[in-house]
Image (cartoon, rainbow, N blue to C red; front, side):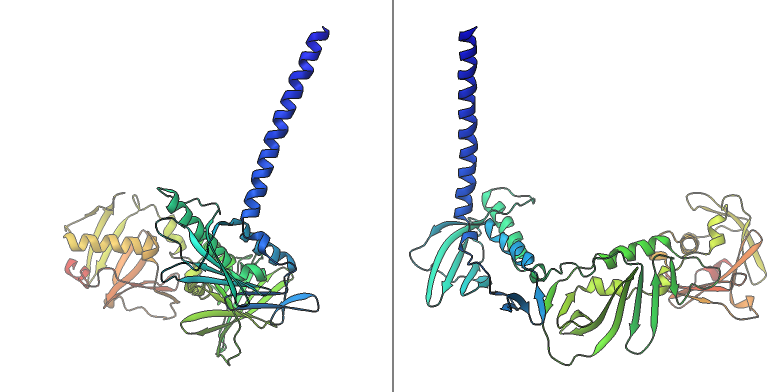
Length: 428
């Protein structure tokens, strides 16, 4: 028994030694990777930081970009990216050839310049300067890369591309990678000329309000809400020129209220938050979301249309004292009484159906208005009878107009068959 006990102790001791050596090796490897990275070269504390146009300097023990104080946590988080920069070899002299330096970062009095990646190796050159002296290194990025690659060079190039994008994000330093960090309940857009639009995501309503007998498009509200909340900042700039303000944009969430002014110059769009001296550049797609037409949030089809049993409801087309009853099947095949539509007429009827039923986004209306005329001249229109209700439509140039006198709504569409014009008249 005593021998078994001693053997057990011996085996446990060997296992412990092996485990400790393995852990030590891993820790040693991590330490070596850390030492080989650029991170230890950072001179702390950071009193001066320059990345692109962003220049931050220490005042009263705090870093400031203009009048904006930078959170020290943002600086620490940003500079941790240097841990992914692995120094492979220190060079005796400057690299030969015409190098393109794509990014320059200055920390305190030390400058770090990054070259383009080598297409054959995926590595890059790093120039570290202080005063008149400069050191050159061959380096590579160790940042995780999820993309597809065929070899180590492609993997390193993908990794380096991601790293450069992260290092170029000055908004990361300012802690403003997203424009809005809020659940937007209401959005107010006011043009410099005075016109105002309000979109209330909480109540699903707009100002101007949807016209009578037309609902709101719930999906459109949700899509727009997400697009606005996801607006990202492309760049941050400081500009002291007298710029013309285009619109005021307000975002509300409970008691939280953010107000921005929209400016445009040099083909770019910028938002300036009230009481701040910097401009946030946003994408053209973001501008399109912010200027979504109010009417695009309204329902795209008449509410009663959605309730029609199209396969069992009596249907008819009428014009100039001629009347054709017809039926339609699930494949949009039309069966007329007393007439057989030709190919163009059948296609035109299918298009008319799709506009009424809003088959897809391309069939959304160009404009919708309240129909206010007291009298309706049927001679100028084709009548589409759906059970005991009637719609009236006509093709004018490139537009299809549909009027529902009972709902007092007129919808205008861009006619998809504008090249063939009005093919309905050949039916009558």
